[in-house]
Length: 496
Image 1 (cartoon, rainbow, N blue to C red):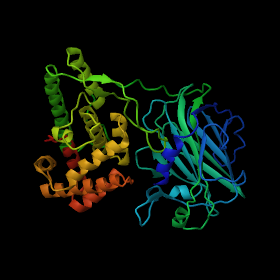
Image 2: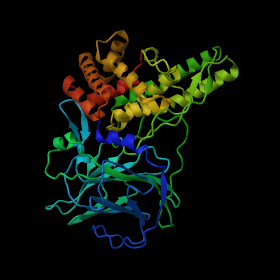
Image 3: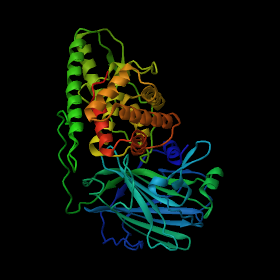
Image 4: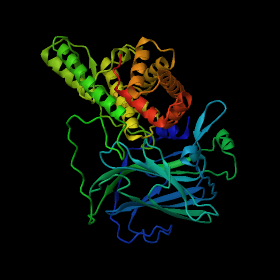
């Protein structure tokens, strides 16, 4: 299992989440790696004995690894610093797109966990995703640390727009970071509580090949996970935007350049189709016995901020009950809440796929709605999404186990990647016509993407939508604009 995925399991075993007050910055912070102006910051000891701290691997003593994190803030930025004592410095610059190591047996590991790094995570109250920053200490020939990061579920970039500095002196090193609120898309206010994590990896085999480190289980890390409460009242805070209207959202998102008109047309047609389908189902529900709603506790494990953050709210499953007007209304409202798209219902062939008998039709509707939402973001905003988040979010949204949502997605992808039956063939052909691409190219693209995605999900591996699109483009010969036009058409096509 990849290191980052292991972390998601281990973090859930940490003692209850603790809170720390992050004070207002008193002195001017100069990002130079020297921490002399940090005296009045919040101090967080990254010690195994401290509350909120978890670890993996065996740490010998304070000389082996010892760290303290300091936090303060003002209206412009969140300031984080760290002082680390480490008897062996093991530096490796791991680029964000080179993190995955794969062994001959198919095992996957995160290279970043086999060199000395610090990771910072923070998430604004109410946000469905936070921001990660990874830092490697400066080497003998480096003036600054090497850093990368970005918003969860998007492609990480080298040197995002944060200020970073660090120093190494013998067995001690420092990090100093100023994270602009604007970059985090945050509007902090006094009293806000940010979910946060500070993690340190400790590697002690400089110069050794990462494959040897992995073979000998040389992965050790320690972290603090908790909540930072902003105290003090700085001048110049940006007011938090008013909540967005709960009216039916537009399926077209504003971007820097206009969307391809074929995509816009397909999405608009999809929205109209979904609305008409819901009205038909709504009318039918008036004369059909409806299930009552029973609260079901979540069966999914808690996860670390570094790996999962669902964009969906807790939902409820259904159990049979006698029909009534009240039950019918409740069923419709529940379906609306589950689908999050005004009662969007999965097409029959998705409902009829073989699935875990514990999964209800309403949960399949939720799978469908979340898949459409993710693919819509990929098309409209040209973002890259890790496909394991499809499993995480469909499970969280439908209140089911991840193995259930994973199996359903793998079975769905197998149907699309194999010989196309009439349902799938008609769907792909219709999308090809809307996108003005050849049907044979559309078939090659959808099969390649579905095949690779299904293999990765079945093996519990990691890949991104961007990588899958790249492979599909190579296999089909479609141009980039044609790819997104086809994806938009597949999203908006009349499903069989």
